[in-house]
Length: 233
Image (cartoon, rainbow, N blue to C red; front, side):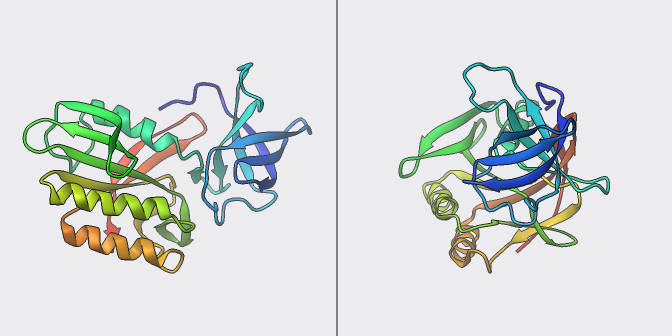
């Protein structure tokens, strides 16, 4: 998935109110960018961090920049826009390029299920329907190891219970962790950050929910799916 508009570099001043970030552009201007990430962004929002922004000229948007990447300035990047994984994964699903999934003919995003929830993707084809819940992973506290979540996620815990319920009613269910970091080759759960999520994950896995994890290829031109990576329970 290529970015619609070429990204421009900047330096982070501060991130605040979850969805706002003040940055300094290369020409010295200070601007406010939209930050499409409701998590804590632990380790990614230190003042002075090099970031990449996507400009826009949409008159309906109050903010003219969107924060897309953190540049670790060592050849590695992290994607901070949590909407990107679903868009990148949708393209791969449509092209049948995601390993580990059952045979399917139809891909439907945002289908209602559970208790006032929407599944990211519902795959239909031979056999039972497959419910795929996608999580963007950006936290890393150990070299090479990504972790989810980076903050308490009651919504994520609820989704795990609903996936388990889908299995109980005869469907397939997949918890898909998409790692938006190029410096990690495995993913695990941050059980110290959200013990309730870890407990719900264990119950879901025991109930038959499948876990898949995949890396991303990231640079300032775009984000695409990389190779499958190990999930460490």
